Image 1: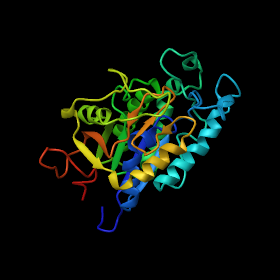
Image 2: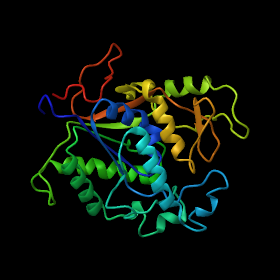
Image 3: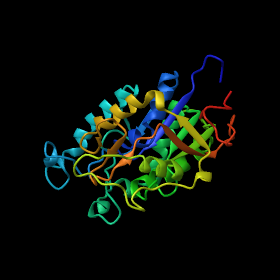
Length: 294
């Protein structure tokens, strides 16, 4: 990388809204820093539940038009974060939201969990070779909270990163190997502190109970990105996904269709799983995902 070449970041997510909920601040921060940021989404989120009445008829068991509407929501969310447009793996609608584990939607042959793995990996290899990211962000092996689509993203991104730099893999583009791969995670102590700080909630919301919100042990977090100065952009992106997300007045919490309150973090947490760490702070954690990439 030359002195004038911008950093490049690739994030791969399963559904519209995942990018804002877990990595929205990181996206906004690095866009503001001048990085080239690509957000790839693997499905349209067709199986999502809908908050409120206005768009309730769009769900999969009614008009089955939610996926198309969520393209608009994703576009608005990415614009709020500084990203020009969505990028759907294989083209918009190539693969369908599989729904949660055990749902009949997972039997759909077009569901992301049923995608031909070689085809899906080849599409990801093509994206990596085209965008040539220095850093890739995706999910951990359990997909954060066990969603089958998130787990499939983890498996396929991991395979694609291994293959993208090899001459033996067929497909367009010159080989490229990202310098670093991170998993997006939630630090347990940060989650506990955030929940403890929750005050009055809107009517109908409730505090999380043990096990409601997934998190990893603090020692599994190797990088922390400060996103406090781009929190307004993150909140705007979350609010853009109005069929899925409600941001509380004041912007300190949000909820999904479960109406379980969750804190909006001013720091986002990651685990480095490929590549060498750069500069670390006194806690032994990186504060810049591009640190060490010359």
